Image (cartoon, rainbow, N blue to C red; front, side):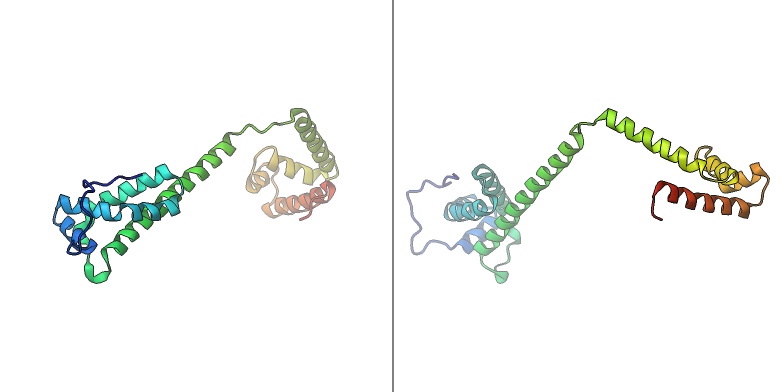
Length: 196
């Protein structure tokens, strides 16, 4: 747990400075005021952070970060906008939530990477059989097309030609190629049991 900065022999007296006064003095660079501010608020800040972060070691780190931020940003504290302890609690809560989000993001990223790198067992025999059956079904479906339709579909899918290139190669109008392709694909879908 975070320990006191001052010697601890002196309890705050009735005329002791308030937390607001200590934060204001800290903003002016008064190290003794910061030490007393730490002693008075560390347990409360740590408690707030601990409720959000849960892990005690991380909560201590976050609380230390909060006090570092208090030291660095104390000159910006505006007492007209709220009390010093409320301002410090706001800093602590934000830091704690950031730590939780960062940790969750890291876990999510690790899970995604782990899932991506996970070797999924593959039944290569079943996969090869499935591919061969698909090829056989495609060949049977192509056999059901007219010669003209089969020629256009084959040039497009196996030859990689565009419809314009097919029309040029077969020396037929582009509209004729488009009609043959459309009709051929409709028959292929039916033959293979694929809905449009």
